[in-house]
Image (cartoon, rainbow, N blue to C red; front, side, top):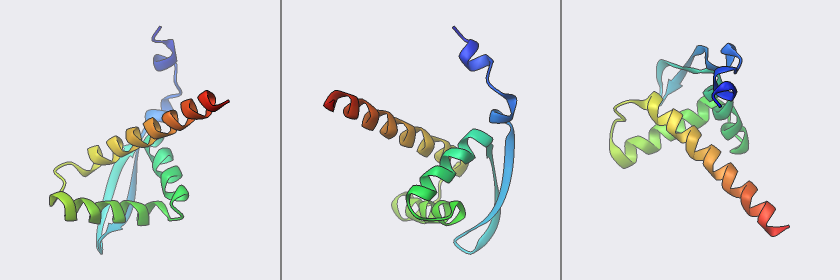
Length: 97
């Protein structure tokens, strides 16, 4: 049962650090490669670069909630929300056929 999880390529969960600017402040964010891939896809779907998307998301979080206690965790959760939406769209498309 766990082979699908345990057997994945280790590069997929390798931590990767990217340097970027959040609202003019230089910072670095460390996430697993799989999450960076999802964030790259989300940004491309929004017509933005990944750093621009992350900076915009950070600004919106500041507006709504003040400083995010753990922004990298917020990014991971945003990826799961995105994947859940993709799954819902796929299920709806199949149901419509």
